[in-house]
Image (cartoon, rainbow, N blue to C red; front, top):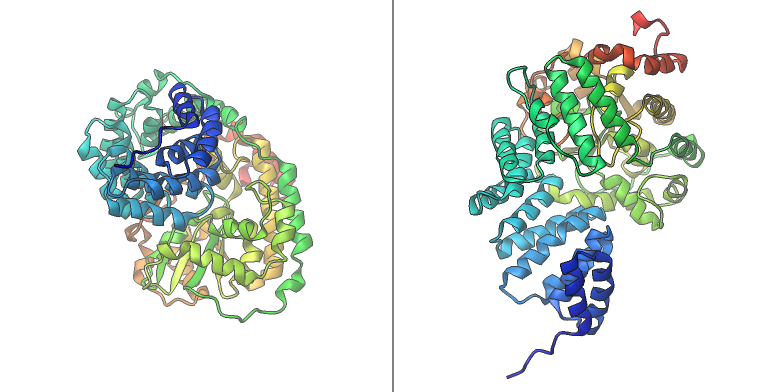
Length: 534
């Protein structure tokens, strides 16, 4: 009988550090352990877990891959390691690979709620909530007292539009956890609450352990106070939440201005005077861009109702593909160095990598697919070069409504300009500057859509949009609320209703507080200076 070698001291040290919760020590010792015991699944698991905790997603993804490779065949650990690899792959922008490894784990069989929840999380965030739903359901069935299972189930059901079921799931999660803040936050944004049916008292009684938790509670209270007509209290909570959120963000107006200047410098008009007719693989692309809360989700649903069109979500794939091909050790954000390198790439290489990374989302039957990431406006010119036949649709909305729509939401880790009135104005100026430039160089290749015009005369504007896209008119496009498919954005509940004017002028409830923003936009030339004309 061959005996396995005794555990190496580095593995014992890694285990001990893990028990203490000292992840940096785990990282150091587990690295050593994987060198001395390269076939130890446990050593690789410890390395992956510690790297994940330290936000080193590249190391974590590799470590969990090795842990799966060396895990005993047929053991629960093998499937679990595949699933653990999913989130760090997503963090590294390797979404297709994250889906593949998660599916591998599911095929091998998952029998514990924690792994089922992890798999559900990855598939939901990869735009596959229908695949995620049975996994979250199974997790809750296996352990009805597993709070995270119910939270995961609620998140999937919300994305799929099953609001009543999602409410039940979030409330169940709240009763089972010592940390209910995330569930309360999602519950607040699930539907419109009333004076007789809300969670204000429960939210006010919560204790927060971090600035992020305090942000979530403040924004949830804003939402429910606003729903119930208590606007003074709502504003107090919004200001508190925004001030806390801004401290967590690194966005600066100067960096965004530099990004806009870099595009103008490195992608001049003459780059668009000739067309690259080399074929691209995959379906015809539709990119919907604009400010968040400007109607991008509504237009996505309008087009997704068409028989020839499939919506595949808000994808970061174009930016990720561009940065990967640039191969620069720069931050994830788009900066002048990335732009200078990106414009030297072969645009078709970007297109092909983008297509490979998103192929898992395409059902194969639709001639057109929609990528609706609002801030792809930063890449519009490069998108045109990568996909010469792509349809690029730019949304326009009254800036006060659009900016207030962003200001009143907590975008964790995104849209860092949305938490102060000055930042909102600065960003809008940069946004309009860049969009004006893209319009100059793309001309009719950028299709303009006004949200207010669509609301006022849906049929006329939808017919115009379909014609601009080369699509025949279909009655279903007038009923976007009936379109099938998931919605994972902040508009997930709102777009389940028929086209309406509910959000028009919503900022006026807080007009006094927002007056400095209105004044700045007026001085910048984007609004009439006359208050009554805004």
